[in-house]
Amino acid sequence: MILKKVYPFIYFFFFSFIAVGCSTSESQCEDENCNNQEINIVLVYGSSTCGRCTSLSNGLEINHIDHEFYDVNDNAQLYEEMNFKFYSVFPEDEQLIIPIVDVNGTILMNPSVLQVKSYLWENQ
Image (cartoon, rainbow, N blue to C red):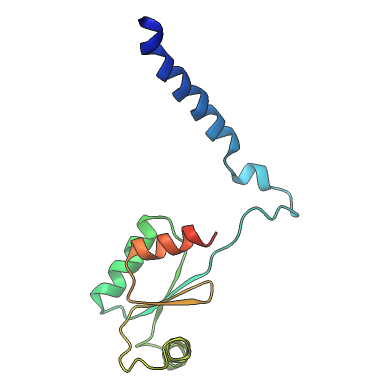
């Protein structure tokens, strides 16, 4: 009887040690030729006065997702870049809704933090 109660705990500890040993950490990839880690480029085009934009940027920070926030109200060149990226992917859409997020070249319109995380997870 005692063995049946202890047995699940043995599996838990055994597999937790295996999972820790198999994870990719920075110390395992100190070599310059290590290609196990991809660098994700997340660009957020929005406005500092837009609640959805700042909320998304803050959520990405909280979730430790490196990103660049571009305020398109302050820079006409960034505004044109955002429009070009959006309309090259969504040519039929008439209305652009910020934030526009560029994740490794894939354009997402008004995504949630969860959608960005899911995209990054699925496309590792």
